[in-house]
Length: 118
Image (cartoon, rainbow, N blue to C red; front, side, top):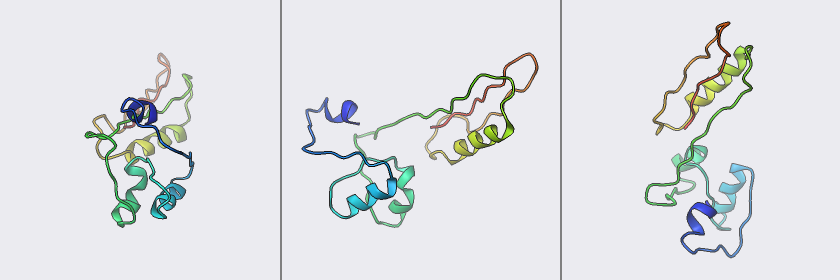
């Protein structure tokens, strides 16, 4: 966010802190100790409860596309396919890509997941 939005706009934060836990970011912001930058889906419960307010970083927001990556091997376990499918189904509702495409399992091709996460 700094390199894509703030720096080009000539904005230099006086101080910043990297916080790994979403819950901690929310609580620091709620406590008036600054602002937090988080994906809307990751703080949906707090937004819905009115604990925090979401404000887009830019007019269109800041988009990031996530992808699941696995080794290209012929024997990807079913649990991995199921895990990736679960991630795809839980991804934000504003996606423009298919939720779940099953692994191709044939002897002539390598099994590779084609799940796409927004």
